[in-house]
Amino acid sequence: MNNLDIATSIAAAHTNVPGGLLPALHGIQDALGHVPSDVVPAVAEQFNLSRAEVHGVVSYYHHFRSTPAGRLLVQVCSAEACKAMGADALLEHAKKHLGCDVHGTSADGQYSLEPVFCLGLCASSPAIAVNDEVHARITPALFDDIVEEARQAS
Image (cartoon, rainbow, N blue to C red; front, side):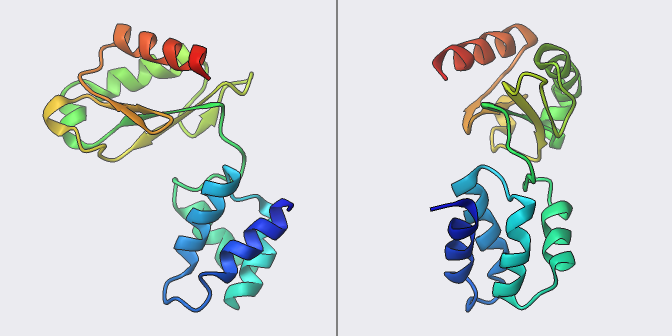
C-alpha cells in the first residue's frame, strides 16, 4: 500500500465524522510520519474541501509536518512552568547540540526539534520528550545524555 492509498483509507474513515479532518490528519501523520503534500488533494476530495483548505490546516498547526521528521523527534516544553525553570536556555542548548533550529531537522536527518506547549510535568520542569518518551528536571548535561542514549537505541 503506498502513501496515497494509506492516506485515502485513513481519510475515508473520518469523512462522516463532524470535524473529521483533524483526526484524519493525525492518523495520516501517525501512519506516515508526516502529511505528504502529494496526499493533500486526495484528502481534500474526501472531505469536499479545496486543497488550499487542507493545506491551510496542515500548515497552521505546528504539530503537522509536511516533511518527514528526523529519526529522533526532540520536543522541549515551552509552557510557562518550564519557561520559568529555564526552558528557553534549554531550547538554545538543544539547537546547538542537535544542529538544527526549531521546526527543523538536522542535516544528517538524525534529529528534529520542536517546541511543545505542556508535557504535563509542570512540577518537575523543565521537561522534554524524545520520540514521545518524557523526561523531567532536564539540565543541559542531562539533555545530552538522554539524546545520546536515544540515538544509540534507535
